[in-house]
Structure formats: structure tokens, C-alpha cells
Length: 528
Image 1 (tube, rainbow, N blue to C red):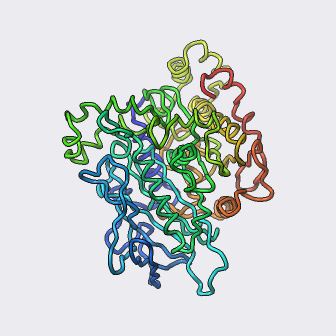
Image 2 (image 1 turned 60 degrees about the horizontal axis):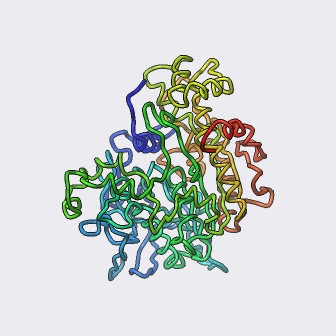
Image 3 (image 1 turned 180 degrees about the vertical axis):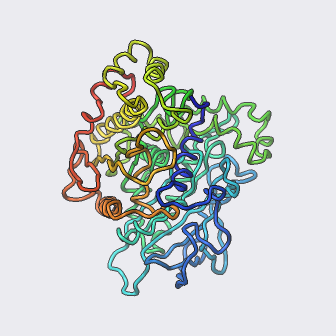
């Protein structure tokens, strides 16, 4: 078995970097994966010769680049740099400028390990909008605000090229950086209301959209907040945040339900049990004496690399704060959610990506599988699980199926049921089992693994979809942007409890609860 890996390392490296270096058409040198481009070059590659577009926002004039049917404005600051005395403070007002600011390259990714040009000064966003054809428009476009995944510890907005979504769906897309790890979720007894700075950044970005989207042709009265994995969990958290009221009007949660949780050993060998969120007082207790400091002045003087060494302790947004007064799971159960339509779902084989980590030192044996079940669930429950999920020829696939059903899909369906008491909910399962895949080389197919849907919505690096994948991509973008425009993904898509199966040759319904043995888990798990 491989050594214990942190959740941040699993999702940050395995999902983002591995995908962008896959053998399926992505050609990013390993030494530069995750880094930002040199001056004059977009994160999406060099811009071809193209016209420039200039707009005025509250901060001043910005000049973007028009190419491939869209105009992009990259690296726009939406808050003051959170450095020095502003470290571990709510986001402050953004800078203003005279003249025209060139918005032709993204700002730095928020500070994270192993990304050389990431930085603490990172509160920037990027806007992609269909190019103005000069004919004018009768109405503004819906706005989609994208929150990236990466276990609240890695990633950046500019890794997601929204050209296809903006152009095909006729929407304005905003991708956002927000503080990560210990810079985003540090809590301390001397920092009242601390532990949710990253979520406060997201709300600051939404306020920027409210105030400035119209300058880019977007409709500030029709904003969809959308994210995947920890980005999806951020969307779910914002649904329960009283301070997010009125900042968005639809929500898309991809593999990020508030109820998702994982027993020990599930995400990686030796990992403890995990949830997305933690109590503020528990996090604050971890902050006392951190880095050998007795004062906030000492902590704020520490180099970024020292602060990042605390990421293992601080990668969960805190509840018991003004942003999240209650645990998002409890808020969901109590119906304390914003009254906006929700599109939520999972990939068919979420956990195969994580199961691959259990095979890095060799295939998982049936004995390994039974031992993991016993260590994770206890002897009696392990026996019941083994009967429901026998190891068969490839035990790692059985382990992946247990993780998919118990940790990902059944909690999401439980969240759907809670949400559907109060708001329209639309459910999906991404089930293309031949997507572009990271080159982890397990002894089993990765199938529709966690994050597999992302290249169907965004361009990632140099990846190109084949004809079958491209056709599914067009249908998904049409559904996602129709939801952004109208609050429903299409007239032929019924609300929950219907779950729409997304495959190359069908957009049919599926009984996801039966497919993922959710009745079994409701009897054999303390969390749904």
C-alpha cells in the first residue's frame, strides 16, 4: 500500500495536474503544469492576432482580447491583495486605477504548494463573454460564476477556459480565484469569526459581478453560481449562507454536495474520516501556537511557505461564523437555504480515481479489500458490505464502488431530497465511461471518474475531444446554460426525483438510488 497522502495532494495533483498531463491528448510539460504563462500570453495559449475590446467598470477601464468568437478579460482584481495586515481579514475593497488596465493575462493562482508562481496576492477573476458582433442585443446575457475544485487547497480559475461555454451557450462566464488552504481557512482564538476567508472571497467576487457584470453584457439579475468538488461544496455552502442572499439566482453543484462525507481510509490509504466543513472553535484551537507564534503579528510576518505548511490542518471552511452560522448539512436539513433552483449530480464512478491510489504499489487483492473494509467499517459491517459488494476479479473496483456509493452519490441524493422540499432541483449522473483520463495506470478502467465531466464543459490545456465526446459536450453545455438562463436544464428534463443519465448516445433517466444501493447504505451508515 502507498504511504498516506493528504486530501489536498490527492485532489490537487491527481485531478488537475494529472488530467492536464494525460496521455489522451493533453501536452503540457510536467515541469510547467500548473504554472502561469509569461507576460503577453494567456493561460489558454497565445492569443492569435485579434482585435481588442475595452469596457469601463467601477475601478476603471479594462482592455481585453477578442479571439475565437469571445472576448476575454483576465486578471481583474475583485478585492485588495490580502497581504500584510490584510492576511486573515475579510476581503477589502479592490484597487482603482486611471487610464486603461490591460487584462490579457490571468493573475497569480492563490498560494499553494508546488506551484512556483502562486502567490498570496491572488484575488483576481477572469471574464469570458461572446464577442460583440456590432448588432447590439435586446437583453443582457446570463452570468455563470465558476468556482474551481482542488480540496480547498489547490487550483485556480484560469485553468478552465470557458470559450466553448460562453460561445455556444451565449453566456458570460466569470472564473474566480479565492484564498486556499491555511491562507483561506485559518482560524485562531484571537481572530473572531475566522476560518471562512475563502468563502468570503467568493462572496466578494459575487458582489463584483453584481456591480460590474453589465459592463461585459452580463445580467447581474441572473447569476448562476457553479462549481465542482470543493468548488461544488462552496456553492452548497453559499446556498446556506445568509450573507450570500441575493448574490446569485441559480446553483450548479458538481460532485460537491454538502452531505458528502468519507469514512477513514476512503480517500487515500490511512486518511482519517473527512467532511468538507469543520466547527470554528475546533479550527481555532488548532491555530493557537501555530508556527511557534504567540501573536497574530508573528503569524502575519511568517513567509507564505511557512503558512502553507499548515494546510493539513486548515483546508475546511469553518461554520459557527457569520458566513456559515450552522453546519451546511444541518442548515440543509432545517431548510435554511436560499430559494434558488439547483442542478446537482455526480459522475457514475466517482471513486475509481481514488481507488487507483490504493494500487500504486501493485494490484489490490481480495485480502487487501477485506482488510480495508474491516479497518474502515468494523468487522460486522464489513461482512455485510462484502456480501453486497463482493471483490470479484478486480477487488479495487469493488472498493471504488463502495466509495462511490457510500461517500458520493447516496449523500448527494439525500441532499437532493432535502433541497427539493423548498426549491426546484434537477439531478444528473455523468456516465461517459470513456472520457479523457489521467495517466495513473491502474489495473482497471477509470470509467466516469471524479472530475471526468470537466473537459465536456471547459477546455483544459491542449485537450481535444473526439467526435463522440464533442457531441456529448454540446448537449451538456446546452443543458447547463439553459439552466443558467431559465432555471431548468430543458423542457424534457423532469425535476428530482428524476435523475438524468448523461452518456454519449442518451440523455435518459436512471434510478440512481437503486444503481448505487442507497437503501443498503441507509441501513448501514450513520450518515446517508
